Length: 259
Image (cartoon, rainbow, N blue to C red):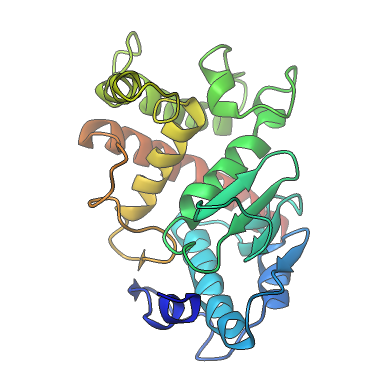
């Protein structure tokens, strides 16, 4: 199926109307969501550009709405770059490059992976705020397993609960079943991917976004039930979702006050 046909087939969405049927362009996405740069590949046709811009705009607006944060929060204080149909990896539908701080979507297969990759960007961005003594090149999820988050700020407490929900059982003493299942999967397949800390955290975030009942956007996140990937169990997901709601609602209140 061609990229145009993939985009034309549409992606199920249930949520607020942000554009009122207006056509947006990638410059609108950059300005609305506060990205540092916005790059569109030279092989993206004019038609694909129009269709994908609307899909991406609505998906990011839905993400901001679910997280209860100002739209520009999505661009991570102007540090995050965005690429569509440009700078991705072969056979990969979407990718976050931590070296260049770029979220890249493939034009023919990026739909449904946006929430997952955005969390990679957030997980990378937040490191300098919660682990300032460590290299900002690391993902916070990985550092969380090795170091303690400073507990002086309510936001840190909420984010700490999220990471605890990703990795540990409720007592906080042992790895939860989600982690154990992923470790076992990697052992069977002689790889280290499913149980990578940053992947465990991104899939947990993705699952939290997918379980929102008011806003559903299959360009933002989809396919979890039919995926070969492993996602958190219900109990872990509930803990993660509550912690995320707490963290981002607090963050949103602070950021809205600054506007």
